[in-house]
Image (cartoon, rainbow, N blue to C red; front, side, top):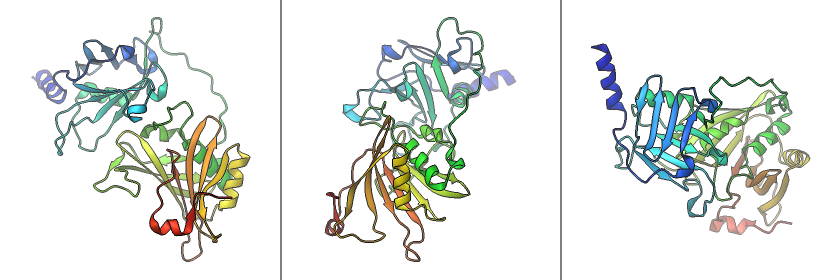
Length: 339
């Protein structure tokens, strides 16, 4: 009796049938943790759909919606493909797709990442839960049935927490820029934020907002950067699957605009004024173009601390590399032609 009850729960929680466009041939294959063909869980993709094989049971074909350009719009020409797994409708009447399979993740052929948005607390079923927990997959190849051989540890670059505050913050900013390998009009996903070792982030999924943030973002994820005895608050904003902007607030000892810019340049980054005041004013926020080796250009906004009037420093990164439109009031004080 217990066996049949458990099976019934799984059947209720798992989508019943595949639907939507056919699965593109270029992502066909079996995906497992580390690419070990004998490992579970396994995600198999073929002309019949997407199937799961796990220690908790099997499932499939899954009802999915395939997207070819979810991170870059119509101009996206990369190889990443998104498969949104449908679990009925959400409270707004749209498809409830709490799980996303990202094939050729981050433009790496044969890699697959699984993203899970638990905002609506949708029951996924035991097989899908195991796939979500595994998170990272690689297409398996013949001859990889044995366990992967552990590689010897190698020395890593010093983390931002082991550097001076200015060097640590500069390192974090550089690591958060979009990689050059990413198509120009696309963005990285929320999990990529975790690649910066000095930043501690709130757990995924990102928080969904009822009202947009200042730049129109409806999703956010908060964190803190550890900088040699002090911390800087950070807030990432974006859409459901991508990060578009980052905001920073330093309530501790000021890092200093001049010090940070000098540190970025010493680290090999290019920094140039992009929007400044027409008349030099102490403490006025300034926009800079920031780029570096193997990184795409972003816009760095710096608002220096101003004593009791504003005791904190503010920073932001616009990952698209574009300046925001000036308001009529800002147009009086600012120019995009900086000497």
